[in-house]
Amino acid sequence: MFASKTIRWVAAAALALTASGAMAFEPAGKVECIAPSDPGGGWDFTCRSVGNVLEELELVPASVQTINMAGAGGGVAFAHTVSKRKGDDQLLVAASTATTTRLAQGQFPGMDADMVNWIGAVGADYGVIAVSKDSPYQDLNSLMSALKEDPRSVKFAGGSANGGWDHLKVLIAAKAAGVENLPRIPYLSYNNGGEAMTQVIGGHVDAFTGDITETQGFLESGDLRVLAVLSDERLPGDLADIPTAKEQGIDAVGPNWRGFYMPSDIDEDAKQYWVDAVDELYASDQWKKVMKSNGLMPFHPDSGEFQAFVKQQINDIQSLSKEIGLIQ
Image (tube, rainbow, N blue to C red; front, side, top):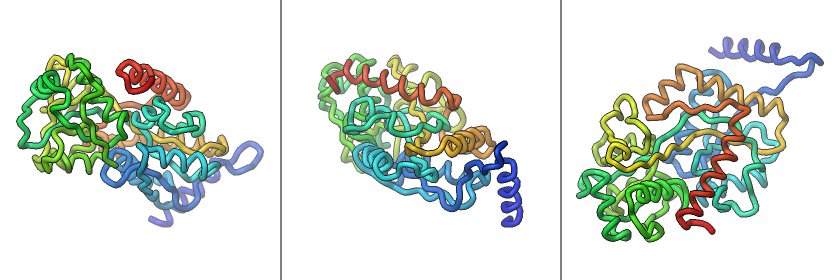
């Protein structure tokens, strides 16, 4: 195995020679992936699952180490990347719609999307609203009816900061259901989805708002019941039994892309290497298996389109946040 891997890297090095004879970028030694959360959440899943496949495909020379850096809805990791890791071409940072939400709402003070390099997406994760197995709410409409009577009657827990993407998903669904006084709906922020679900299962909070990939373990154990997935159509495979909000008469869709950014000031050939690596990973059979088993849907804009997509999503979320009174 070691010998074949060495041969592969020698061959890759030979192919990487430019016309001038200079060596193009390739990673050396350990690669780091920052998950801006504690273990158990969506960003942690992104780093660990992608890291495993990068190693399996031999797109990295050694291991990919996941570093958990929770705080401020991803703000601690973003600030660390911007202020302390400029030029670091061995660092990937997990990102998602939660990241663009915080940027859209100005929650990373003094920082914006142009301060990092946006590398690519590896799929989309759809939002869910779920309750414990003992909850009195059997479907999304019964929960929304309770909110219509009293917006403060149902407490939600999620892994994003207050006003973040998990919080927004509740408000999107509630608005579509005709609930008024949206800012009065209680939302409790935890460091990750796993911690939030534990609070719901323990009976401390009424409902969970997060992404389908986060719920897999608790769904399999039967401790969590998903009232609705916020997708246009039912998800495939083992998740096909979960109803959409749309089929329950509530026109709410909440896709959450999964991907990466890198520090600024990296060489263009280093950025291109990681863009190509993400492309190869996304096209691989290994990653298709990960997507299928975790409810990830196809989503992979071309490298030239991804940065433009990120900026457009930030503009769209900013408009939505203003519409429902989260920001001025």
